[in-house]
Length: 338
Image (cartoon, rainbow, N blue to C red; front, side):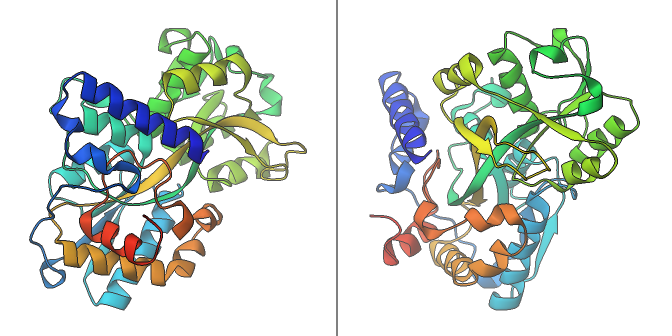
C-alpha cells in the first residue's frame, strides 16, 4: 500500500508544479517526510485547550480520539476534550477555523481540501493543513444482509442506500465507488445517515445497504450481525482498477476472514486515515504532543482493534500534506523520517 501512496503523492506534486498551483510550493514539497519550508504558529502548551475532532460516537474515530485526548490531558496536564463530528470534511473545517487542534480525517478529503478540489471545489485551497501522523487504513465496507439478495455493487441500482453523513469522507467514497461501477446517485435512493443510523435502518427494513468506511471491525456492522447475517459487498476487478487509476489514494485491500463471521477474505478499497495538527500550534508544542502520543502509543492501540496498525514505521504512509514542524522534528529524531 505504501508504494501506491508514494507514487501517487509524487505524481500529484509533479502535476501541481507543472500547472503552476501555488499550493504545491513550497509546502507541498514536504510531503512524505521531505524538507518543509513552513513555520508553525505561536500557541504554546500553556496556551492550549486541545479539542480532538473525531467522528460519530459509533465509529472508530471516536474511541481513538478519546485515547489521544486522555493522553494529552493525563501526560501533559493540558485540558482536552474529544468532539463527535461528521468526520473528515467537518474536521478539516474545524482545524482551518481554529475550532480544533487535532483532527482525524481520511487522506482523500485532506488532499481535496489542500488542493481546493472535490468536496472543496471552488473554495480557497487550505494550504495550512499539517499532518501529525498517518494512522491506519480505512476499509470501504458496503454493508447489506444475506436476506437482501444483493450480491454486488451493481445490485444497488434502485435500492435505498445509506451513503454516510453529507460531505463526510464516507459520502465522498460512496460517490467514487459508484462511479467506478458506472453508477451515480441517480441510480440509487441515497440516504444521508451516520453508521449507527444506517445500520438501524437496515435492521428495520428502511434501507437496503449502507456505506461504512472505517477500520475493521466496525462496531455497528458487528451489531447488525447479531440480528441478521451481515454481508460485505466486494470491490474488485475493473472497478478497483478504475479507483486506483482515477483516485490513487485508494489501494486494494482485504477484509480478513472472520472479521464479521465471513468465511473468506473480502476484496475492497482502502484509504489511509490521518491525524492532523493545527498549524497555529507552535513547533515546540507540536513536538511535545507528538512525542507524548508515541511514547504512550499502546494506549491508542488499545482503544480499538483498528488502531493496532498505528506505528512509527508508517507515519508517512499516504500523508498528502506537509508534516507539522514539531511532528517532523520528533520523527526525524527517532529515525522514523530521513
